[in-house]
Length: 177
Image 1 (cartoon, rainbow, N blue to C red):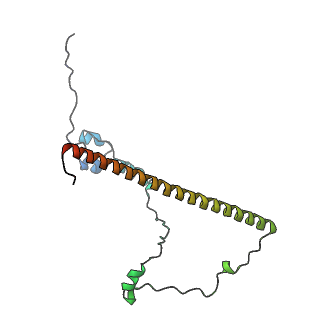
Image 2 (spheres, rainbow, N blue to C red; image 1 turned 45 degrees about the horizontal axis):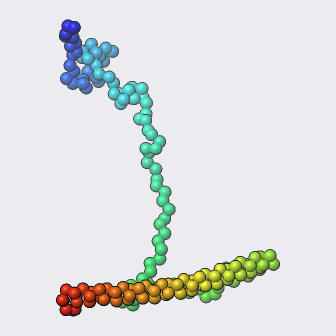
């Protein structure tokens, strides 16, 4: 194998933009012969010559923002704080309704089948509530029993610890504190 040097054949371009007079000022058709090197046309130049509009992306255009108006919960001020406020700053109560609302005044007439279903559901709810109350009472009773048992065990443990300490102190000759 023999090393072969390859000749470097290139002409470095110190200014890739070219002169502005060569781009715009030439009236003859062959601009390359005047300058020697002619850079590629920019997008703007091509669009200007072809009379093309600037491209626009549909998702990049500005459009009005549509937001739902925010609804805030009414401000609730504690009674103790309201009492300390001056009258001007106290929240004013709204007028009370004089009569019943339309929903309250409207008479609901249930069909016989609907009445049977409602009665049955009420009975089921009553049974469930009674069952839950019974279970709650039983669990409360169990909890009280467990606490008593734990208290007895703790007392027995304390007593055993005390006896053990007494024996050790007696053996070591230390007076109990």
